[in-house]
Image (tube, rainbow, N blue to C red):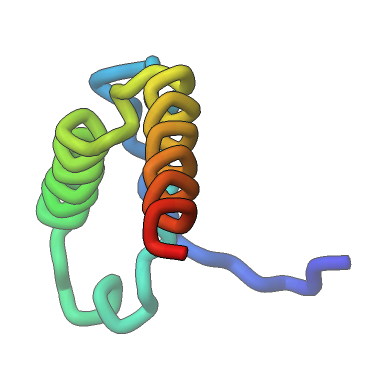
Length: 87
């Protein structure tokens, strides 16, 4: 049960819906009370969301699952061969 708590939120639609539909930012009371304009808060939220999309698209998340399985099998095989040769 929620009792009378209100928060200010910013909802940013995703420029790339493959990753997420929208991001929801909960604004701190201090930021809202220090006179930050709604436009400035929205720009900051959009910048953060765009930065996240850039990091995800540059990372390993673009590799297909078979690449992870192949890499794991290759490393396991290499460790097994080294173990057999060194004993």
